[in-house]
Length: 555
Image 1 (spheres, one colour):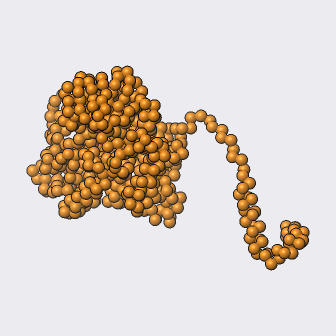
Image 2 (tube, one colour):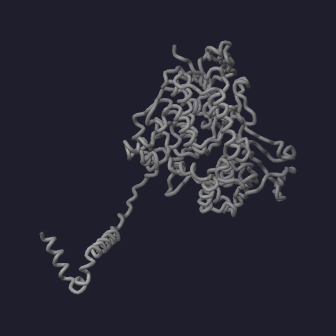
Image 3 (spheres, one colour):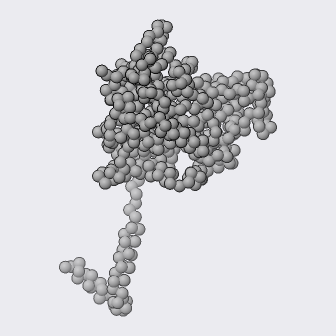
């Protein structure tokens, strides 16, 4: 019988899970609590309870070639960094192409997922759902894939801000921010310098009377635009990743920090943190230094207390008549429909083998997909996790013993604690290439670099020296895609395509004589050395040598 798999959530991770289930001959049933796909990336004016929510202007921080599903490139004419509406368009094209929507039950909320009484033998789950009319239904599934993400429940630590109850203005979490217009000519404080905090601060600063950005630690600011105007994330190659793993982290961080300070001096702009670059999830923002330079954004330390409409900061400075405070203080994740002994979560820590499988389940039939915070794109990672999980469900891949899995969990937690500053934000961090290779190795889809260099040098060099795009993980193994090679070799064409919006007749470069002159000079030097014994005679009568050269040309 075909194994039935419940997929909880119809966002980007849920779509990848449906597709991977179909690829492996499994029967997916996706339960989506809203009326549409997209999850986090679907903008709605009014946030819904227990659902991710974004503001209208959100543009993704990863480029299209690095964020696409590995066997379905984003259309070439799409911009490299896409607005959330275009991301939704891509998801719809993907879902239509692979006929995924017919496996989704919309407006259906999952109330409970629990092990059946014979779980130790069958590995099956009872799943209880409720539709929009309040009708409840019970289902039996052979496996479950949880794809609810980690941006559903806002983290709002008001207890850390004395006097907030007396604040006369308005305050809310960044999840509730949508557009800036109503705050025109107002004084606004944004708390937090993550990606959301930076984006919201920049956008509001265009209309506010003054914008203050409060940060405890500061941050290193990356730009979407890299060298030569190319997407920054496409310049992180396998070769660079090898170098990063070989040299001490402090040395590598120092080299990159030096480059970031060439763009703008983080200390001068009052942003330089005490921690190193790779010890915190970096902030990506193209306009931040311009806003500070123009004075529309002022960087402030942590808030000490609220006094009516006044905000006092740790350095003793006070801002009067503040109208709004936006808390961009992150999120917490949980699985309320799961029993705590299945997946326990404490302060954003969950014990999961390679961030996917609960290690102590008697049968590996439950997987958490997309619960990672990568230095890179999450979509290809969730897809790779889904490829691994579905093959585990089928029995094609066996998980190691419980003790080995728990040891892997501990090692990852210790490595994270050693590298990152202490924060509930840094509990699910992964490095894109390293983690993708780790899971791909388990699937059998990790590209063999040596073999590629020997059998297909052009492709091998692109894999080594070019961007580590998702297509690399479709070159071999289960799920191999015939179009992967061509997608890799043409990825730079798709980068350039959306920017070619007008004819640009560059003047043809003037032919330089420097090369031929250097070559001629080298030939003269070599000839002089070979005929060094005849050099005195040549200097006395050069016509003799010229006659010899002329005779050779005539012959």
